[in-house]
Length: 90
Image (cartoon, rainbow, N blue to C red):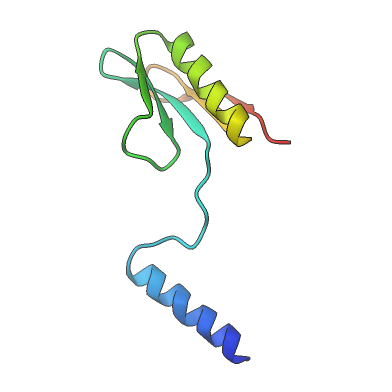
């Protein structure tokens, strides 16, 4: 094992200990039920990106972001299940 491999192993252990993920975050956008309407939320985020009264408006916003970031849009049903997934990857 080289010193570089050992250093990488040590860094990964430290990141795990602090709860950090070494994997990069995605830009996938989720359209989810929120309060009395719908919201767009980036995958892994607790905060919402935008709030909307209608699901169709939230879907349009999520698609705009996903196209720009070459990501997916995951559309949820009112009770939380996944209704559809649209991909804008190359």
